[in-house]
Length: 455
Image (tube, rainbow, N blue to C red):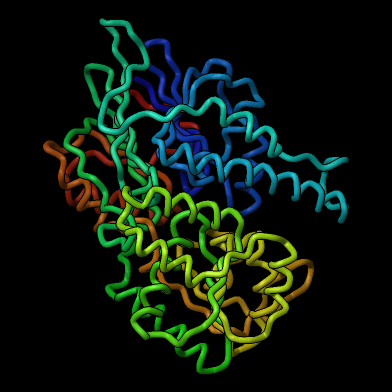
């Protein structure tokens, strides 16, 4: 087997790995680059491989940095199957059309304000492109190997096993009859309130491991208690709480925690709004799939009873004009776009309000700059003063820290011959490399973009 790293090197986005074996080319993950401009521009560059030669794609999970390039791949000529778990397939039905819609919105905005290099500005792909690629997605059962080739002397098969993180997220095991290569995808937390913990894996000769928090330990604090304190302090000042949350995973966790706090009388009675069509759709799917999670039917009913779902643009505008204290959960999680930007524009200048970031903030995003202490942030061409209280509760993250990743890997029956560390900023990946080397005394490397290695 040969493995080429086509993304997620020195960054937490753009996950793509090309595996070549037995005249088959399989792409593991197919994500968009997000964050700073130099990374986003990579989305417009054709893949350095013949797309028509790719036989199949296997997804670890549905987050856009792992699945969002699929429509662009299809436009370049890929027409093969896309394999994933049932949960990932259902989430892709929500996330990919939304990503296409946002691409079109960006193009329309660029045309209106005349700042694009292209005339007219182009979308990387459209909502219709995204809906078309959905027809290629095929869900497969977990815990059983699926054959990619029927050749008896040259078997190539893959298996999915759950790793927490979000609904449907899985590690991908690929076996050629001689060696087993495992891609971790994004590893979840062991104490997540609504997601089951990552499932142990027993064998891996070679591994590709994420390192989003490879240089960090999550705070040893109760995130629900901390969130409750922030809410109480903010409401006592007469302010509102805005939570920029990833539409899949974090938005649902925030609703769960707020519901628990409210029912326990730990926070005052206050209106709670979920203002993100995609997050609302994902919440509906989480409720429908609650038996795969830690959510009971009663939990789902109580969340619905507490929450006002803001579905239309008109309702969103009206919400932004309200002045009474409230809790607003809105996407995007890094405050890089979507409805949350309008709420930031309104709430940031008032010291009574609080902004609670609930997940990883990639370099170059508005969320990262605000968390780092920026005095102002540019929104819709205006410099908005940052006077609200800013909180970054890393304990709310859906990603394992380095100790949890080591805990997950410690279940292996044998130490892998080789580990490749990806999907992290440069410092995080290199720190994770050192942690794994010291813990397991095996060969660990951080690969470079475009590098090909033999398995």
